[in-house]
Image (cartoon, rainbow over all chains, first blue to last red; front, side, top):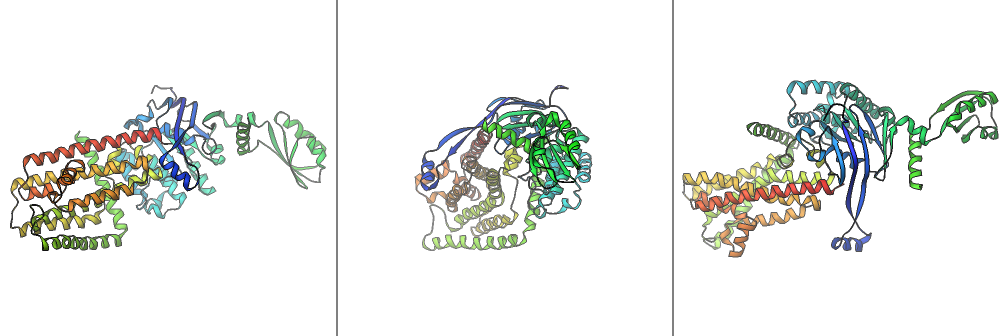
Length: 331
Length: 266
């Protein structure tokens, strides 16, 4: 890889696979035992993007959009059907040793830790597998211990750890070799809010300290808003947005959300002139107003009514994205 | 080259320590398995003893000569349970749950990492019982194995282990297509049972199959002949040749399956 070149380059990647279909019921089972009908699923259909060193990019899309498939192609687990993929200057599917030593894949739903033994045993095994020198191993483990607060978790059998504790250890096991590229597939899935926040902080801090390039998928928008300035959205295997999270809201949701608390009730008709009334309670009202007129409408409102409090926000990112997918489905 | 051998040696040592640590977690299983090994030995012996009550020989083999074959059978049965079965189960589980991805992303040969990862020490009892039976049978035969026999025995047993490894690797590799191959493996177990008696006990056709198609003969009969000083150099080298061929075929099949896995799965 030449300096200045993107760390990850995906050029017109396609990945199709064959699935067999089965009609329901016993007869269907019997028929498909002898004769299988196959169709091709376009898991990833002609997408291109690239990541610069040190970027954290959120990779979004509904279930089955092709996120995991793309991560698997990038990490070398799947062979691309067409297109070119390069990570750190390597072709991932060759799974060369020098490539594998510089990347990591964390899957929130799968474990690499040895179930019946303490996580420390998996760490030691990975030390040997990745040929990590003693002093480097000690330093990295001490750092991960500090950031993830592993402490006593390392010496407890993995099967006795809670989901969140296990995820911390999974991350540590996946990062001992100090990979330069991290593929994180739903790293916070199923965790409680506090633990999610901790994992997020860790990912951000790890990126700051080591300048690692991170591609992250998550269903929790809080992960994405906290970590990623840039998002890539795919839907049905096609790329539908690649750019700053900020402009995503501006571009696809042409309104802002005004939440107002009044001192005395205001008639609904008055508010309808200012914007779209989403929620109307005695003293608390939520309005959608056109983005470019936000300031003007807010001023009008303050002039016309007795306002206790007002907030102006972008619509929640979940809604923005849901709108995009709805539009894509419709059109 | 030396560096690679040392690296994989160190890894294997860690695998052994991990396996032992896991086993110590389950004390009851370890103890009950050791008791079971002894009772199994008893039943196996009873089986051939009943046969020799009625007959003097199986093929050209007398009771204690056949006991050497049985000893080898028990030894390799223990070897399968200790070294091969836990890994086969782990591979099927990896394929079923998708954790094979972690194996494939390690900068270590995937076949090594997947096939010698676990050892079940509790089955060492069977291996010891098999060895004990062989020693006792030789004692009863009042026969000291010739030096050539002892040397070739080790080579032949190694070849036998490699042949077993290869057969089982081919079977477990089928899991890449069929996912759950537990039943196919059970089927082979029943074929392996044929190794309990010398191959000459079978009709010609079966003997040929057990020698060249599913080379069970090389696992128990041939090493036993070496111990009894009857093996010819030709047959000994045939055994090593079969081991090399099986290993090459099974490794090739495994690699083919991995390529299929990365190009066909989702």
